[in-house]
Figure (spheres, rainbow, N blue to C red):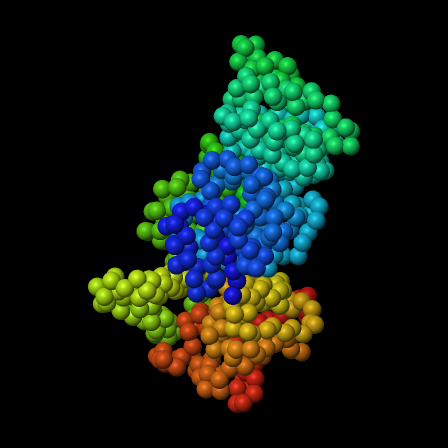
Length: 601
């Protein structure tokens, strides 16, 4: 069981985290950084630290001292916004840091904790780790003229000034320039109107000394004192081995402000040495189709949905819109549309331009035309999956147990409230029951958003490996070890998002029935099928095999979970087969197969 160290002065928050996290994790609590120093942190050996501080900037030194006994790879979850904590010393090599500002809900907390406790992906060093930022250095994120200046600027340490409206990508461009110009130090981001900017001179000076990059957003708002500080940083003589960089953004004409005395002339001239104009998106509609394609592909990968295309009418609607928030607003509209509709083909009626459109989309459902087209196509393929009777029976079965828990709590609430120990136990059970139902409903919503498959070459073996990595903690708690053969990729022609979802539901659905402290062996069979060899009770294996072979009839206490029904439906929708054999005293073998791709022959 993983151990979590909570550092927060609030007794209420400490108790809340104990309740929310208990059962899955061991929780240790410290009221302050000083209290951490008095603890034997090495003996506690936390796998994760949750930090909570008052909402004001904190120096790095106290944090570094308190965390010194920890391993450098122990992840941190900070219960503040990034701007509230000076996190320079938190970023030890190999350490992951995430932020979850208060107030937050239990579901968000659990999700962040689970993500941080997952084994990190293989380490990548150098700029390759941030390769996704490279796109911000080129069209269509920049105009041709701006991209030409940036290419030249990457080889110098001269200051750069980004001029343009909000949402045109200045912060992303600053990060990309910092990474791909080979800065050896940190990237420090401050706002020009930050009240304590002048007081942070030591931090800015350290950034310059270490060959880092200082990015000042809205530099035109800087006070006279802050302007003098920035000018002094520019004019300081630094050793050539540690060149530093000053980047700034503005929505104003600095030279014009300098003529009126509103801005320091020397600083204005220095910053405008290499001006990079970030052209508003509405003034370059020709770039919108390319931006939409890039952003859509990235978001579809993050949302694990099938590839998305746009009708000409939808693309025209996007091109004609006056993007007041520029690229940032365009990305928000695409993300909102894909998340709530998950359309395979985006039409104008799908596009959710405004935040309030999201509420309407959730109450009215997808556009009528899209639903009408999907139904006859699905019927023509003969793809149905388990029938409605089975689905409803499984849903009722999955909801019954948590509902009984909540009902029991309600019936005994008077006696429960008078006994702190019983109250705490019932509270934990109720939270777990609500979490279970919420997880189930989220799974059903995800399943319902899938449309007709969009097959493409997909490495099914990699999809299964990803699922097993996601379930690593659950398998470890059960003592089940994963053994894999040395087969290479298994290329099949399927809808990647749908099959990934199906495999996730299959593994999660089987988790309860796996025999503890046994192996789960994964292999690719000679015929190209994926095989999972597991140990489970003989009666469980028989009822699973019977259910796979006869997918009709009502669900009973002996049928598998709803997750297996969802997995079977999506596997069948992708022309896949699910088979179960064995289980009579030996291992149970579950096989999944699909049409082979052209690459596999």
